[in-house]
Image (cartoon, helix red, strand yellow):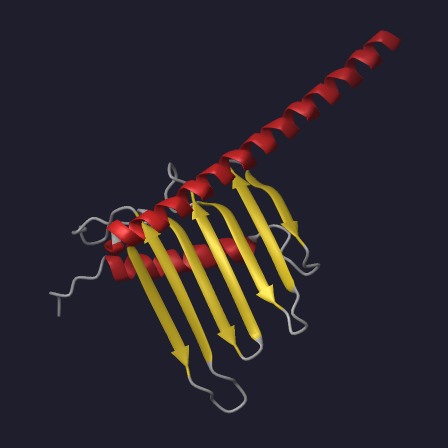
Length: 187
């Protein structure tokens, strides 16, 4: 009985070590994909500026609301020139996206890295919010095939599962699809 218990304990420890290695390997792969995406963005800025879309939204001060400015950048591989009516899209071609939002004292920067195989699915998100005292609240989310792999944050109010970051990604990809697939010849 004692041998069985020791064997089971060793098996549980071995399985948990294997799971940790798998998690570490997944995060390593995501970091490598991130580095390649940043390199591609830098290179495309020199050779293929047409693979970048910048959306700027500004609001003037309105009563109690201070002026705001939001800049969303989409970096993509290729977008088909023509889509059949009714075709469903899921951020095809977008591999990286950034958002900068400023409103009064609020200053937020966000990034999303998308899976190259499962287009439109985020594998990494980053958020940084500048505080009035000069400090920064940062959150990093890593996703794999089974969902959230890891979340790192110095913000005690951060979304532990990253649902808000996933929703932002989905909403902005829908905007990208509408812009990229508009047909200016239609009335």
